[in-house]
Length: 382
Image (cartoon, rainbow, N blue to C red; front, side, top):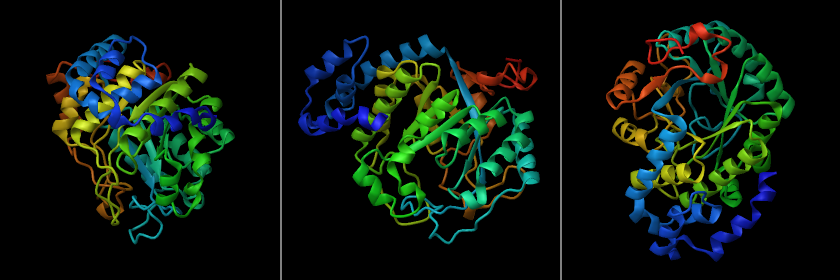
């Protein structure tokens, strides 16, 4: 298990404070072709902030080497926002008085059709944590409804048992996104005072259960701002390294979500500036060159555009965080958080073309099953 594997690194925070790392240590770490965890900690230090230009050059070269000039696009589809958790940073908190909704299968089909019309063929399905309102059987029904229209379906929901992941994979799911939110167990307990999500270890081990079940891709992330961002980025990357080494057949990826405005009064403990975000992205790319890296519409359009050459391999486009809204009227009161980049899929495609990148509208994982559904930038089959 990752928790047992990572204990030695947790002690490193106290024995090697990031603030005491020197510029000479950064230079040494940058000379290594295969950085070790100690080097990752160095690359996340304040001292490494003075080497971002050099780190960016290396990150660009590594991204081109392993991913070329292509960026995959996806859209999120919120199926339900019923939730039994009390996460203090989330609009879906069961104590928040927001409109609750669950899409019917007919509404799921309509939403899928509206998203498919934009050219997107990679869909990420999301819910709140309520087994009563959006249990595994409901998820499977939604997957079966959507699968004919999409080349790839991902899942970002509550943690499931290994057998439940197997059943969803059989239904048509091929990727999992699971944010631990915060790896610091003490801080995790503070921000999850009630509900099933309060079980730190069950959530932490969910990505590994999905790997054992046969998931083709797993995306990890910490919600940056809840805890000390350097420690959170470090532990996220170590988690990815652990999965890469133990499940080499699985594509391991990272996402870089920062706190966004939401219903409630929670404020980030450790705000992450744009410069900090760039440093995390570069450290991830140098530490794990083969990992995918996602940037979502939480970020402003100008920042997303600037981050693409530094290591981004996947972006959301034309996103909504409300339950429904692609096919009909939007429900702004039911959103999980406010998005910052409201550009359409067509506008994102045009931006990528201007920067010399190839937008990929379907995930390669399952294109062999639905080749007629795949489009590269809406122009040619993949």
